[in-house]
Amino acid sequence: MQNAVQVLGRLAIIPRVVSSTLAIDLRDANLQGMDLSETNFVNAVFKHSHMQGVILRSARLQGADFWDAKLQMANLWNAQLKEATLQYAELQIADLSTAELQGADLMDSKLQNASLRHADLKGAYLIDANLHGAFLEKADLEGANLSDAEFHGANLRYADLQGAILDGAKFDGTINLAKASLVGASVRLVDFSSTPMINEHIDEIFGDNRTTLPEGVKRPQIWPREKLDHKDYTAQWRAFAASKGVDIPE
View 1 (cartoon, helix red, strand yellow):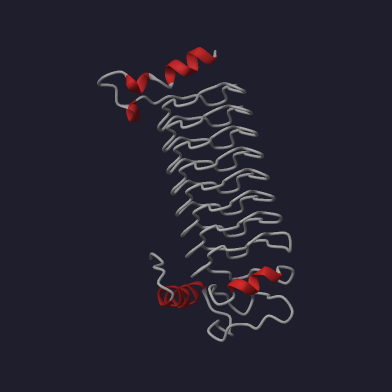
View 2 (cartoon, rainbow, N blue to C red):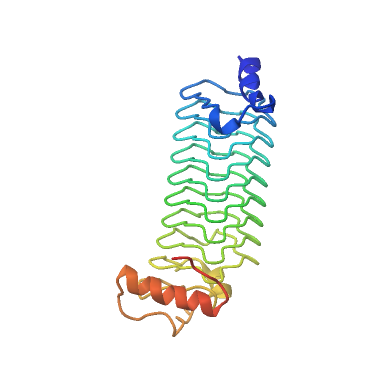
């Protein structure tokens, strides 16, 4: 079975074969523990597949669909996952270090204790993602949407969160934000009351009257005091980010 899947992942190297037209469909497949390193599954479908422990090091997976796939302990080191769909995917303890995930959709994904060190997540969607205990050192999350994501115990040391949307995200005192960049990040509806490290970033971020800060941390005067609708808040956040040199796209 592994040999057959490896052959599928190498069809693109055949002269005149265009990988985007292969339409490889492996939904519901059992690929557990297979070594599929350096294969090409661009735009392939892996919906509901069982891929626990699969090895996809340096694989080309741009635009692939992993909706609800089981990828616990998978090795996706340096994999190319730009604009891939990973909604509801189970990626606990997976290794996504240095993976290219620009624009990928990881909404509601489970990334507890996963490694995303040096991963490129620019513009990725991580709405409602579970990042409990995840390792995100030096990850690039510029412009990512992390609304309502859970960060308890996550390591974001040196991570780049410039212009990221963190509205409603869950933080506690165990998160590591040392040397992280949150310039121009939106933190509306976030409760930082047990996150004293946020004080180091208070002048970088933009919240509103529903953002809770730790005792003794002064609320920036530029934050709106009144409750704003989404349109007005976004306009003020975009202006704040621009004053910090961060462009928030429309």
